[in-house]
Image 1 (cartoon, one colour):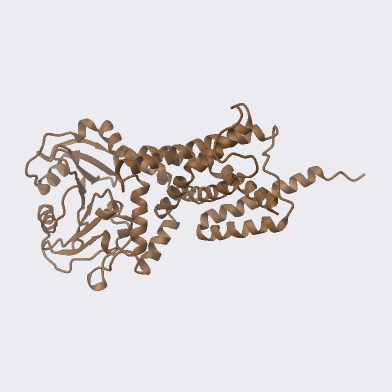
Image 2 (spheres, rainbow, N blue to C red; image 1 turned 135 degrees about the horizontal axis):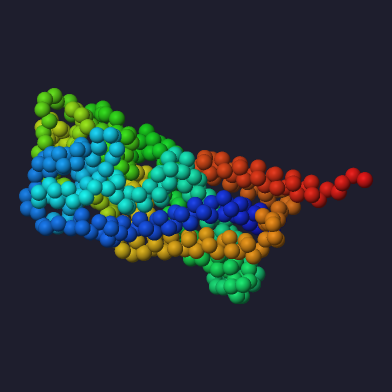
Length: 435
């Protein structure tokens, strides 16, 4: 029975890898790049980012000058902590396109204009395949779900049996045993980090992540409700992407006072009065009644802070930090910051980088190991176990996981159908023709 279960797990581990190895390699490469976002941005945009230290800056004047110089409408401002670093402003152009400008805070001169988020915004969109739309993002979600299955099934397959070493490499690179041991050893060393990356990346996914956000919100496990229980629609708001996970897709507190709007400088002074300091992102009100939205640029999750300032008179409508999140939201936001290598500084980043490197090596060693094992011209899936109870028991466990991650579950069904087709084709080949 144990041998049959091993065969069943091996077979599904093989199919999981066959489905998602290219996507996991993609995640490992783009994720490694994103870990070094500050360094890459400084290298790529050095002429635009470095400015002479500025004195007192008038944000309202900068907004007016940038709008005149670019012909766009400023929707968001990013103020860095360093006084010798350019501010960034998000723009909506006359044709509806989005751009980002680097601005000298001393005089409002636009130093350069690029795509939204710049080069690292592109890397982030590539990492999630959001650049390809909902289908690409769904594929990444599927890959993350299968990565969890791969790690858990790989640990079972690795578990020492007989003379197999716990860790180490036997044989030579020309032999399959060498690649089998290398793959197993890499999985043991990097598996925990890969599993952590897959689990903590799921809350950002397009379907599962939004579902979880809605569930956390509806069960009062996210942020507190806006004052008075009312608010405006937050989904799709310009500032949503700059906010912590726990604060996204929520209703925002609205300003119920009519009259003229205060300018950005007055809103900044109001935020500074309650202790908000740079770096932060300020999203400007899109219309009367909507507030100024400040989001602190946090490294550790505990530093997260979101501030709503009334656009009519500078009142603080809501001031929410990490300590006010619900339990589920605190855990998820901690996971997100750790996933990005931010929560614990450089050691955190190095561990995540090692996980990405290990994942990339696993995606390389797996197809080499399979290629050395397969007969020419065949897929050569591991043999099907003769014991049906072992296979059924494993399927029940996997389908339970598929119910937790529905998109991954759908591809499990696809893998089952593929296996059925291969089995039937094999039976036709093996069945002798009638005399």
